[in-house]
Image 1: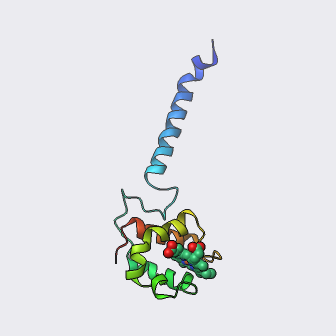
Image 2 (image 1 turned 180 degrees about the vertical axis):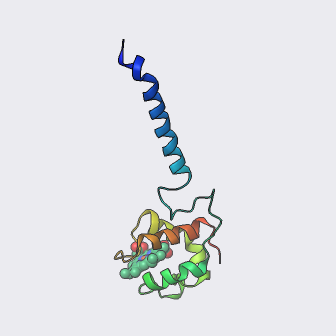
Image 3 (image 1 turned 30 degrees about the vertical axis):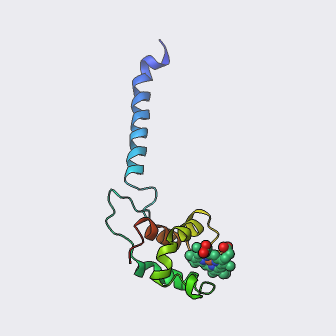
Length: 116
Ligand code: HEC
């Protein structure tokens, strides 16, 4: 008798259940409830929601007209650069005074198409 004659099936069932559970957790976005999961998330972030973040976290430096992210007309054309700096490179805001949720909000606004 080898050990797997007794426990082989049990081990396979446990491994399968673990893989299946992991898949469901990732699928439902349970690992990160704030992330927009296209399967379940219908809410799209609009500019009115990110504007306060630009106001509070960026405007102290970005106040010149061509740099003022609190204006939709200025922020929209620059949205991909904004997302790259805030979410990917994370070198904006300079000084780093921002929360993770605010970074995600900016990312989601861009991912949702930069709606007005
Ligand atoms: C403490 C000052 C400061 C704050 C606060 C700040 N920035 Fe900046 N930002 C700068 C400076 C200085 C530059 C130009 C140098 C550089 O590109 O790093 C810049 C450049 C940028 C650029 C590149 C602009 C371009 O035309 O390519 C983007 C995008 C940007 N910032 C986004 C943001 C966003 C979004 C915030 C707020 C979440 C923010 N910044 C907050 C100082 C700041």
